[in-house]
Length: 300
Image 1 (cartoon, one colour):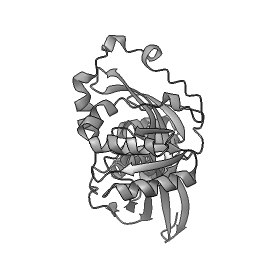
Image 2 (cartoon, rainbow, N blue to C red):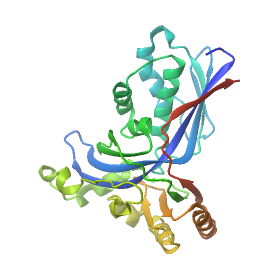
Image 3 (cartoon, one colour):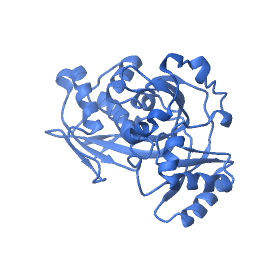
């Protein structure tokens, strides 16, 4: 890569087609069983050769210091790059909002791993790259694989699943976020499963059947999120009343999405619900099979 070139990574959002909380683990995290799905909503990371490492972002709410997952991913990969670990100027362009249950930060971390692996010519086997992802966050390994996949453990043990198909989606993004930590803390005593009784055979075994298997779609966090943020439940009800084949909170929220028969119907519903929910960002999207990836090398 010459000084006249840049590298660009595309980092998709995700929804959870199902999310079950099976109990608390000895390490303090929760045991999860979830089905992830990447969708057509993207952050982008552009990398330019530069004398020193610097990160900028078009969203002022996103930190650009060492706490940002993009820089943490670069730092983690640096030890594998040796003398090839040249500095870069990094531009992060955000379309995926924070605290929305869409995995934007985790996807950015996965994109940064792919991007710097390309920039520094680091060749890692997939299991090794997934291990690096786990060190950055529980959702990061999924974004290295993409498509439709099951996550167990903390959500970081990924199993590819049959594609959910080209689902037409309406996303409702309210003018507030929901902290994952707050949502899980609220779950607290409402999670009554004894840890000794946690069994994937008893409580999960999602057995995803592939496209349109909506009978498996539920989210255990709705029981604590919806009572505390009733506007989210109201939007979910609006999706169902508008003909959604299924409607669900994504992750811990705040995004609520609906699955529709086709893109024209999704477009109509997004327009109608957007007009009725002032301050909300209501948009259409679709399920995709892509992961975070480097899309091109281009002139500056």
